Length: 254
Image 1 (tube, rainbow, N blue to C red):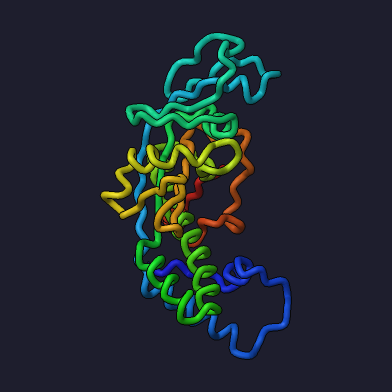
Image 2 (image 1 turned 60 degrees about the vertical axis):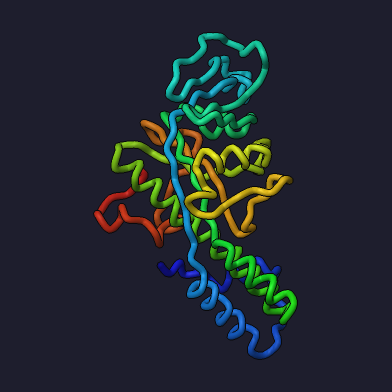
């Protein structure tokens, strides 16, 4: 599958801001983008899980709504006594702590966990280029960063389409390391998805993904469009190139 990496995205990762370029550099960048797309074999995995959200009132104390339960019933209290906020992923021994992930999944019926990676070959080629040609290594690293984002967009588009087929609405992906959701959830996150066995994705002792050109994320699935989310617009959607709904004359919004 061609993911259509945009040269402008690669330039953005390179920190380009209109500076003069040496002749032939754009062609060199395009050649490296093509090599990434042709040589690498990105992989992804998705899992769907029920959730129990604890401490939603701690995100918005003025609301006084108690714990919003997702697939579970609310706790019925107007204020969680322990003051903690977290999401338990049903049947997975995975707890996602933090106010931000509670906000992201508050009111969701379930969630989709996903992981995607460019694979070990991206690491090997980058290591080779760092020795052979540092400039090409810099461009290759930026091209890989742009490519894995496109892979994540395609994976998210798959989740949105599968949710729509079930009459559900998806919000945007949210990953460990964003806001107050710690990277320390990565080992169990990958274990739940069996990511090492299925796509060769592991995690270091410092909770960084390996291969490094990899992404993990959580998408909430709701019975109705999430009120707090910004409206989706097809023309500006990062997933539009991978959308299967529009081919059927449908949209995931409105």
